[in-house]
Image 1 (cartoon, rainbow, N blue to C red):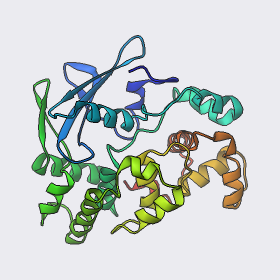
Image 2: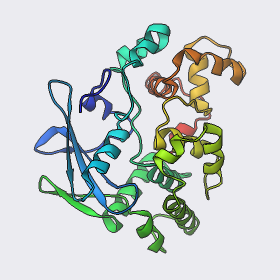
Image 3: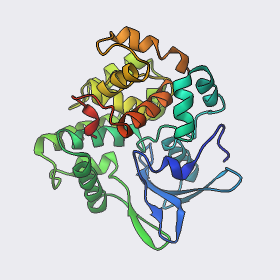
Image 4: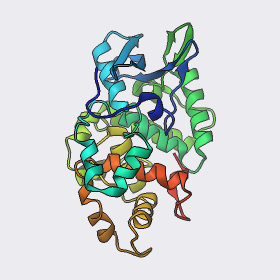
Length: 294
């Protein structure tokens, strides 16, 4: 497939998710995940060719088309980015960040289900600890697929997760919450298309009803799991970064901050990702930052 609008696969992969690359082909990234619908798991490789097109290969499943679409969605490649550059033309700050970060798009969790599970596991522990635990869970309980002579492991499917009564490194309370996440996934509440089809406030209300999911995690599931393109989280980093970037008063009300983002439409989520990366790299983080949790 050929991305609509600018896109740099390997540059994207430097931020947030950091998927592994193939030892024999360092320009090829590998994703492994349970396919939504939960019939099987898959490994998917992506490589960007000189003509900008993305070469996709699917391993270990019977529904290759669905696996491919899920992998592309994780890179925000299922969305039309043709007008992404126009936001930067309207808004000088976003234009500057687009140039600096090569028109980066959000990189997402493989599914809202995996996003919710990651947030539950990562509550009150570091990002490094969270990633280590998730990798161990995948290797011990997830489906294995061989790619280029190497075994890669998907996070357990909801059905498998429900069978686990103990998970190393995860408290009993979190295991119980993970079971609730698994049941919600099986019921369709954590389906990407379902969440994208809801009004943001309706979706967030449903997500807040899940065990262990508060407002911050609900927004993370919606915007980093489902990948809604034109949403604006209200977390500390977002509000603080916008105030700094646009010269607003430190105590500027949220309504004034949100008004500043109108020129970002219909890519407010994408613009916000640039603001987060910029805030982290320039040490412009708020003192009380939830961004240190994953």
